[in-house]
Image (cartoon, rainbow over all chains, first blue to last red; front, side):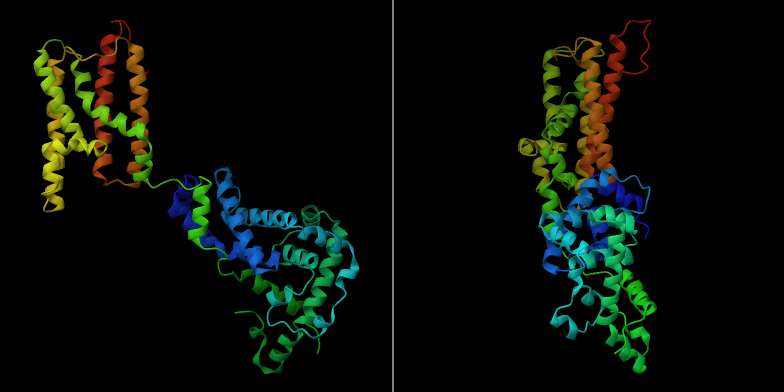
Length: 190
Length: 213
């Protein structure tokens, strides 16, 4: 997504219309990553505002080495992780990541069937969700995830494996229904 | 029930990657927070309103610009200068939003209440500009008593101030190229700057050449 240079320059000078334009253009994807990482809409809503303030605060330092969307995405991930750390969620997450027992399913999980992958992700433990989102959706490497979350690369791989296994099971019925005749194109959320 | 295959999950992930989310916040609350942080600048008009020194400087440019230019030549009676000053000040007040309240006694202020159309307002605005030019020309030919800078350094200080005003005006014109008030301020500042440069030239030794200030 090419962001108009003039819009960026105007936004750097604090032009509200230009800033709004950037927000309108990029918020669907920026807010989506915040939402996925948080796994809780209310928490995500609070953090999204902080994220956008941070993006605009950092904007004068944007040098255009990468696409604005990519640059803003990185800020969104970092800011979200920091915010989650601040509210003590990461502390639990980091313990979970090194602790395989975090993957043990509760009774409700055994009967839960997700309607979409985003719904299924909410059923992952915070640590597994973070690793899955960062690796599979955001494209981070295991080394990068390790640095971001303060875990080992191996811990990240292990958590990803478990997250994917759980998602495959939680979403089985979605594909089963499509296998029954409606076609795989129906599996994705609309 | 069989779990999804790895490929089927990858397909869903790929689609999820492209899938946006509805905004988690609204612009009203976000812009309020950004404004509180000082990250959103005020609109042009209020930005200038907030910068009182800019308005005063621009008003002074209009009022004393002609008088400053008049310092270049000698002669003229005190009475005529005072008359011209008051004329110039009134003219400046008429064309300046800074002095809108002060313009209540001027002819332009009374005309403002009678504008029947934008065209008529433009006509009055242009006439005010012409009056300003006329007053400046008069002052150029008849100065004597107005206290003026005594040396090159004071002219340089004024030039720096005028350049700052011009820079701000240029930025404003990029955003509002049709704004008559900004246009007038800008043109008046350009005129005052040229007059000041001429004056500065007269204070330098004959052998000196003005390349920069």
